[in-house]
Length: 463
Image (tube, rainbow, N blue to C red; front, top):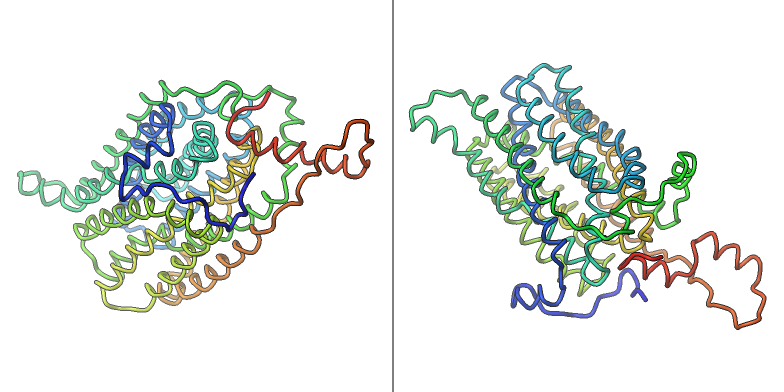
């Protein structure tokens, strides 16, 4: 039986004191580590890609408004693909979706690096968003299928940190490669060097397909194909959402919109407003990745001591406060330090939120819940990115960031309040021979049986 959302969990071995004892305690299996390798290559490649791409657009005189349209088209494509991908995943399983993702996303990414025309960039960004949603929809059900409720927080935290080491190295390479090539005698332009890095990062991401081909998934889990129903039944299943899921989607939409209002523009802000050089931005990116891996390892400690919801509230309030501080100083060094702290804080809430979603969703419904979540996230992020790009052009970064941080505080508090509402406990089984009350029985049937059975399905497939 679950502890309350906000309650602290039982203390276990600390990763910082004994990594081996921490790993032994959580018992993450072979399948998890195979997926970890695949995610390592995919996240390492695309974290470098997304870090550099907006700076690459600046070389071709894309302004904040155009960059906002490109990023908005990407998230709009992700939104358009999530629900169809969720339905497809229920029918054919997640493995084919992952294989398609590791082929399509790098291919489209390379095409985006060579076709520098605004309408083409918007169109390709939409297609890239659809390709990337194959990963975002598949990711949560696969991790949930390869972990149990006892080790899922640790598994989520570890895998969210998966590409950090390589990404940190990539940030240094991104920053200093132009100087290295110039010293070696190559006369490449800054845009040509960035194009080379973007294409190489796509090839790194595609290398993870070798691990996907070896990925073991349990038969009958939500990561494998479910019995195919009629299209009408599959569509209706999407809208039979539980009260928790409806509240969760609202909270995620708020938070995703607020993060998307600044995160895609962070490098542009550093480069254009603070006049930070490319080499320095590369180092900043590397330090940001290091801060995130430390935050990922710290997250289980926070959740264990404060509880799931209190931990989410703390990380979201920290991110909102740091965003407000970034808007204030004109000192470049201080702004960089605040940005590093913000990168770690805003990133920490994601593993905890997605872990909460998987824990509170019965296994057969996880791919649907993941699809809905990514759909809502993409819709909110698309609107927020497009609007933010226009607001930055008109009002500048400081004024807009003050407004974003204010709404972020409200969103954090709303998340804590809304997700703390627990559903009523399911009634216990009646004594033999007793006739259950019809109203209670009907309500019990609508929620899919006993709560204890739904909880047990989180950790293993049910017949």
